[in-house]
Image (cartoon, rainbow, N blue to C red; front, side, top):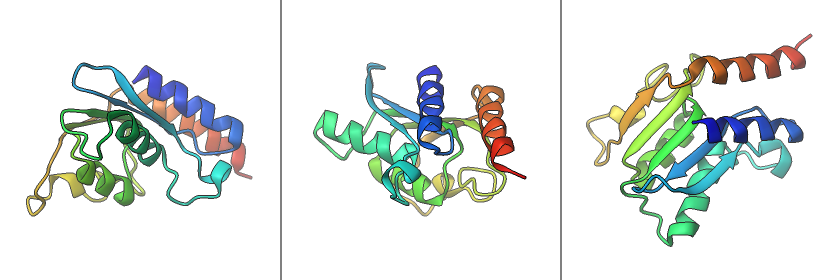
Length: 144
């Protein structure tokens, strides 16, 4: 999760919301990294999770990321929760909860929907204080 926090801090350089993500393979080797790049790339889908999942798929040569773990500093939104499920990762670990757009327990619970054929293990609140502090600092600097 510390690597994901480093990715989140790096997003600040491009004016993006500081969210970072890392994908670990079953041996806990980093196979994908991502940070929010919506502003940098003018791409509405360039969320940290999507960037990290794409890199992991290229590294592993498969879109099926079975046995992998995605660590992200903020609870995924609906788009990213969908990408997590579709990528077949085994585990999702996230930091801060997102009461306004979180789709893994806060506002919705996409990944635990029993109607889906793949439901990864989910662990939230890991290093949540550090993740939340980064986000609060960013948004305090962008308001009034």
